[in-house]
Length: 378
Image (cartoon, rainbow, N blue to C red; front, side):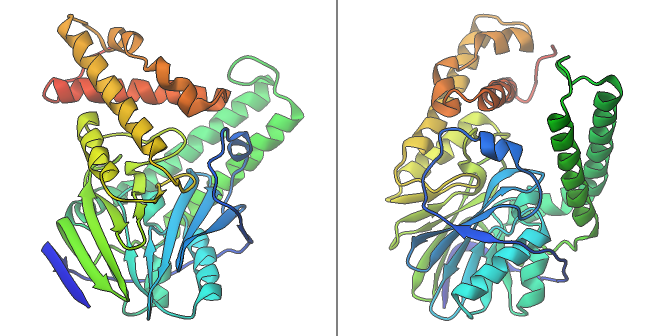
């Protein structure tokens, strides 16, 4: 084993555990045009799908876990051990995936990679740390810093969101109407009640899990020659600064975390920095791209589409500001990136709604970036 890096610091790991059970289906990797089926699902482990990507490389997609949709974890089987990229929102889902990994191989998990600090990508760390005493968890130093300063606030935030959802459902039941004023049907009420129960179970897991932090940190780049493979870790800007993307040059597989996410890209940091990172990733000789959320892609079309969205919004905001737009609302009405909407939403009303909301978020982020951190009021 040989490490080559600008900076890499071994730190320390801890452990502990949780529970649950269900079934994992193996299917064929193909992007879906719409996701009405996914939008109606919820709950831990109801649908976790396994895809064989290349020799010894497996993608596990949790279709929905009450927090996010189409969430990916990737297992890479090496000569003597396994590397797992991202560990899910729930320890219970991580346990299901670990059980499937053990069906594939009896080799121990030696490395876990946390792409970034958002809870859906590292809340299962404890499962692997408990099962494998020699585990190292790889992340950027910036990611661990964010984890340490943000993670303690999540129990309060998730509990508050559960109360909000319970109040919203109580309101619907008392009035017999949905938020848009239409009648609350028995079918919709049953679905809403199931969704609430699943979110409650997610909150319960979140309150009881044991946070296990990265132990092997790097800045910029880390190259690991291990188990017959070359792993190139890169710090990029995704929907979080300091996101780790992983490229395997021999296998031509790129794993992006939420630098790329399907069907509607996640965004947060300055859009131009994310676009710059994606352009760098697009230069890699990758035949397969596994995003943080969504199916594996066998071309760069979606990656390039995400770049186009970020650059379209950034350019549009720049032009609007130069013309003297005075309010956030004014810029958001001007910069809609509507010409790209169909390419992301494919006519799905749910995705169209999410796309328009995401563009508004992007506009606000682009304004802050182009005005030295100063935003606009409505």
